[in-house]
Amino acid sequence: MHIAVHAQERPNDPAVTMSDGRSLSFRQLDHASLVLANRFHELGLRSGDVIAVLMENRPEYYVATWAAQRMGLYYVPINWHLKADEVAYITADSEAVVMVTSAQHRETAARACAGSRCARTVNVDDADWDIVRAAIASPTTPATQHAPAEGQVMFYSSGTTGKPKGIKRALDGRPFGTSAALDKFLSAFYGIGAQSVYLSPAPLYHAAPLGWTMAIQRAGGAIVCMTQFDALESLRLIQQHRITHAQFVPTMFVRMLKLPTDQRLAFDVSSLKMAVHAAAPCPPDVKRAMFEWWGPIIHEYYGGSEVNGLCAVGPQDWFTHPGTVGKAALGVAHICDDEGNELPVGETGAVYFSGMPAFEYFKDPEKTRSAHNAQGWSTLGDIGHMDADGYVYLTDRKAFMIISGGVNVYPQEVENVLIGHPAVMDVAVIGVPHPELGEEVLAAVQLRDASLASDALKAELIAFCREQIAHFKCPRRVEFDNDLPRLPNGKLLKRLIKTRYTAA
Image 1 (tube, rainbow, N blue to C red):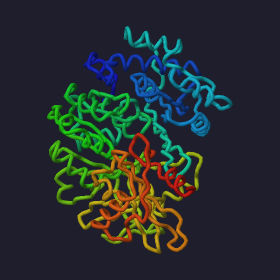
Image 2: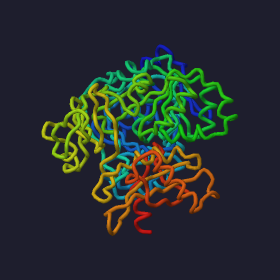
Image 3: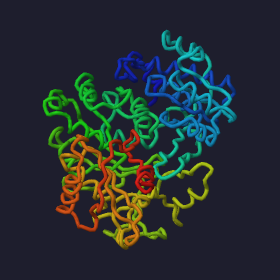
Image 4: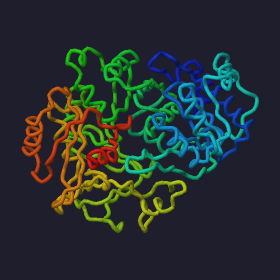
């Protein structure tokens, strides 16, 4: 299935509705993306060429990505929170020749394209978009349709530990409308189809929000897309649109749970059949609180932008295997040592996957090589173990592991404890240099009420941690921080946090 089929069979059904009410029907989206694809062709783009997309969440985002998808282009979603130089790096590195942008990012787009192969910007708020705007207002099928073959998204890694790298797969010439692995997974595991109404609260430049929403549109489901996440607004939208499926990151759960009880319980969320979380580990206590509130509909999956494999777990399996991210649902999971050799059940090592299409980090053969072992299995650098039933449990990213006094400390375990303290809104645990231990464990804590900050509370948090896990894992230092930097997909920017406190 694909959007052209839905445009014929259910032309007026919504393909996307924004939280502010703007919307596109399947017919409008199909015809507008065809018109834009023809415009790309007029600009000289051919299958295998690259466009960049620098835009806030809005309906036109899908017009751009579907235009690229249906004419065999690579499309690169760019984080609009980045500075102009960072956008310029991705634009140049990806070899994008056209950038689709908006008035909000006009200046950044112009600076990013200057001096690169990106010789043209297409602005959805300018005259550039007039022909597309006309297609939306009065949809008619263009006579010409170029290269109806599947394109590919080319995400850039989020850069939590360094400069982002493009994740590229070879185009395989599949006809437009050919189902991908993600489409089949969403249908088989979550029952997503034409009757689904899916809430997407995160920025579309991230892999899951864009990938899942386009897959759901391909299946004929309706998307409700938030311009930005707000805990109260998300509950209102669930009630208003009778949302059936939604995806969140754990920090969004935390923010919803910490709403005043009367506000939190004022909305009817009974339409929800499934809420899935990913992108960052969810503290078990937070997950249990969501089960108590929403019932046994909370699912979890583990995977990356590389789509080198995926684990998934439903509520019943999580109850019997608490803390797991599930069994492999795409590919085959393995736990390996530092040399890439498979480890026995129960031993901790790097999580690898096999049996999925190959990928490369664009223009970085060394990073590509280091992500694969001799068998060709690939890893994202996450550490974990597998039990005898095949369930995978994550410990942390190898890059975040702290070695204090010769002992490995995994920050996520400590963060899961501290987030349970009633005074804590957010927390990041890092290792900072120590003259005797090599590194000491430091907890940077964002309080729900900054006025509560005190030395007494620091001591209380350390004691709270020591009541629940071994003392050597617990922070020796606690610092209060009013703004812990996170990406909108929930990932902590630990590189920035570590720099902040190492410099201090």
